[in-house]
Amino acid sequence: MNKHDNKDDQESLLSLFLSTSQEIDESIDKAKEIIIQESLDPDKLQREGMSFITSIQQRVRPRPLLTIDDLVKKLTKLGFPKTFLEKKIVPSAKAVDWRKQNYPSEIDAIAAFVSAIFGLQERNLWTTDRIALAESPAWLGRFKSPANANVSQIAAYSYYAHYLAKLVVKACKVDKDEQLPGDSDEFKVNYLNKYKKFDLESLLNYAWELGFCVLPLNDPGVFHGACWNIDGRKVIVLKQSTKYHARWIFDLLHELYHALAHLDEANASVIESEELNPFLDHQSEEEREANTFSRYVLFGNRSEEIVEHCVRLAHGRVENLKSAVSNIARSENLRPDILANLVAYRLSLSNQNWWGAATSFQIAEPDPFTVASSILVKNISIEGLNTMDQSLLKIALSNN
Image (cartoon, rainbow, N blue to C red):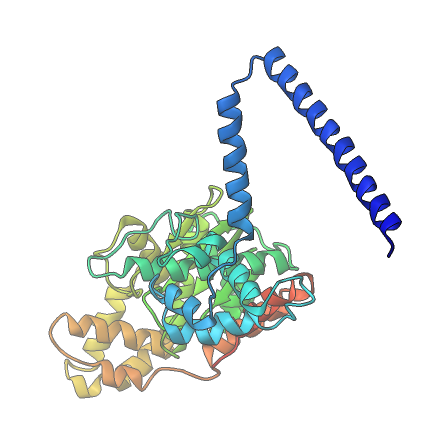
């Protein structure tokens, strides 16, 4: 490069600078005119401008590194067991290729998924040590906390169950086939006219025919079931720790009553924070009504009469009760396992323990969770769900 070329470059740069400076000066003069004409406050404009610049800087500032372990630790503080998060939530989020979903990283995809399920502000996962659940229809409504309940754990799991319930509603492919019964008698007559006897599979099918979705869950914890009205569709969540059909049948009848009687309003909910007891009536009015409905459907108004008949047939001798229960169940067309549970409970009020004998009547095969989940799968189509949601529902319905 010679001196002549260097001089030309300097003149070009000077010319560009002068023209740009002139444009800036003209823009400033125009801005001043607008400020005067509109009677704007220059100091306020400056503060707002600086605030905007600061917000932009905060957005582009590198976030603190968040690992999956960090995220799990934060969520366990909300009440989730670590094993539950690692078995049910994280694998579902990992089911998709985060690159194809335009996430910056895998942990970003997991954080977004977790926020959607639990109603969290995603930014709080990155910027705060503690996170909190907001109030939601997922766990409000007819929820009464027992004195020793872990409310945060109930609330946290309710978000998960409610999210799954929304997926089931979205995927549901069946319409209501049966007219809703007006009372307990009509329910019992309509059911027996169609299915003849009470068994878990038939009762589950009848619930779906009434238009109720039934979602079984098998995670340990303080949450024991729920009912929700989601966009006009009522969803029953069954969560029973035992494998006995008798308990599942009672729980389903109990929740069916809630669905029939207590879920007319949009977003109405019933959360079972305590394990359901078929025979205990010291709970809330709604729970007593649901228990009364269940017992009536199974025994009519004759539960006490039937127990007394068993005791008379056994001649008041505990060792004869097994034979008496079998005979009465046959003559009254009752399920022996459910009758045995009723007799054991009545004896427990007299400080007599007959639960061991009652256990011998219980039916555990086929696995009730598998029965309920198979019927659910038959009534939904998950193709319309995104990959993460499909994975979440599949894992929730897996029996492991």
